Image (cartoon, rainbow, N blue to C red; front, top):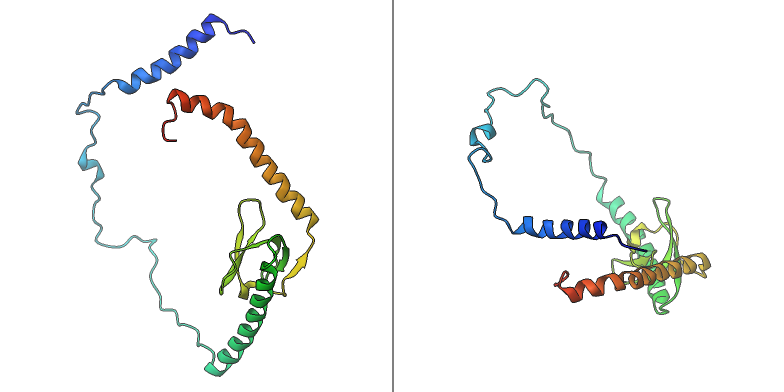
Length: 182
């Protein structure tokens, strides 16, 4: 590609003009300063007509303590079995797990950061979703997840290609001092 002298002159004027404008001091005048009287708010004595009036809403009656304990222990047992199963799956680093949630979502990914309260399921190459054991509708299961493996591989390949494409642009900027925070 051939660069014409006028194009080079226009590009140089643009970059030099920005640098010169940034170095000049700006003068302030009284016209540019805001008037404090413009920002004063008049106090109203009465609320506006369209204002909402707070009403007393009665809180629902909590269920009896016996029902809560029975329901809580059943959920604790189920969550504990899910936790034990996830801990077994997490011993193998590259195992894909298929989870069905109570809200209807189905997630497949790699297990990371398994704890007492929940675990992280890496559904993408970089990001994941933190799930609590109580959110699972069915027991998690190990799957081959060929499609998810291909998706993760494609995402990592894209990130590597993006980094390789940005490197020739970033290195000259760093060496010339344009990017100095490296």
